[in-house]
Length: 171
Image (cartoon, rainbow, N blue to C red; front, top):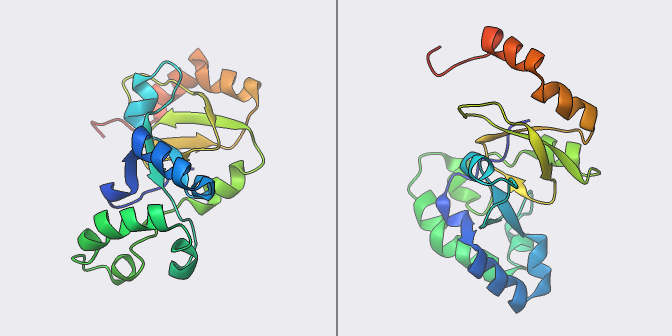
C-alpha cells in the first residue's frame, strides 16, 4: 500500500507543537500522529521521525472541529492554500488529506507493526515500522508483521529480482 498524501505542508507539525497539543487536551492524540516519510525512514537507523501530522481521517467538518487546537492549525495553514486550488473537493474539504490511505489504515489496524519501504532509495531496506503512525506517499507498506516475509523482502534473491524487473529512475 502507498502511504497517505496530505496535499499541504500545513498538516505537518513539529514534535514541540505536537507535545503542546497533547498537553492542551489528551483527546488530541486521536488526530495527532507521528509522520514517517521516505527521508525520515532512510535517515534514521530506527526508522523514526521527529515530525507529526494532523490527520482527521474521514471526519466531517463538524467532527474535526471537536479538536479545536489541531483544527485551528489546519484552518490557519491549510485552508488558505486549498482555497486557491481548482480541485473542488480539496477546496471544500480542506481539513482532509487528498489521499488518506484508507485501505492501508484498515489493513494494519490490528497489527502492532508492518513492513515499510521507502519508494525511492539507493538501496532496498525493508524494516518493521510502527502502525500507530501515519506514513506518507513516499513510503510503501506491506500489511504484515511476519518476520519471515521481512526476511524474504530483504533477501539477495528478492533484490536480484527487483534489479531485473523493478522500475528505476531511468525507466
